[in-house]
Image 1 (cartoon, rainbow, N blue to C red):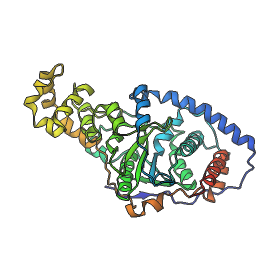
Image 2: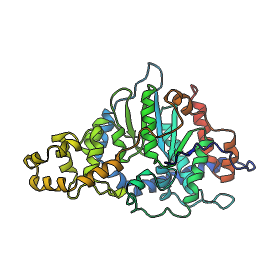
Image 3: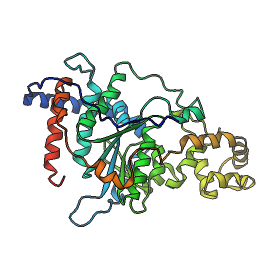
Image 4: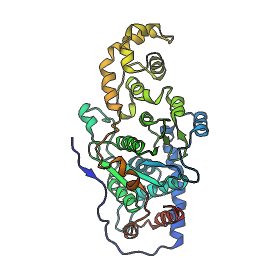
Length: 374
């Protein structure tokens, strides 16, 4: 296992400060708003797994994270920067920096991130990123995510650039070779709970439903576009199982997005019935002879499928389960101080000027200045 750490603490590229007319910021905001709408259209397939009625019910009953009277919620906001970059890339128009570099997706992330921070009250924020295309899961199964093609050439340089930009904005930023951003989200959520902080994971991926917990301090999911909160009740509405059963649910059904097979012929309804009756994947295999008596269509055939698919289910479970103890060099006791948003750094001026996207920087500065308790 490669445990090399990248905390994005390097120096920013030099560059002379450029003029910053108000019109530039307004034009960028207008373009970003239009592009953001296009990005939302392209992301609807990703969000369609959750019915609209369920979304509103989930939002209305999602519990607020605990806070003392008159104080902001003591919680950590964890944002998947890689996922944001992919989402905005297909909606943002191309845009070149003065030196010719493509920066359209990076600018899109800045505007999306600014919107998230404006809507959310958390003062502790962490950005997480994938550190590469392959992780320990590819050693477990080389077919993992083999269905995905290479990212577009003009997007590739923006992976490192967006990390540099968010670090310059004063946001704690983490990536870890051999691990995915989702593993880091689960790890930070677990350490936040040890530190007595709740956690909100800004993501829509269903595999992160396994990290949700209503137990104090709570962990829930926050949709990056709608701000809809998914708590344990929301997980039950979305997947039909408890958060603690999500891994076993996906082990049975697989995940076509990540090229995880699961058990052939077992869909969500069958998986829900099996887990409702036997509690866990292990419980299912301990009760194979009882499956045919379940009140579901094709119960006798289902028992055979489950028996024949044991190895596939166990493999899928290993691939789906997030590592919530990834070796990030960040102790729970240091989490609050390390993730407190400190506002844009001095180097952000030259960096944003070099990229030709100074408008968002003004927005981040104003937002940070408005949070007088920081």
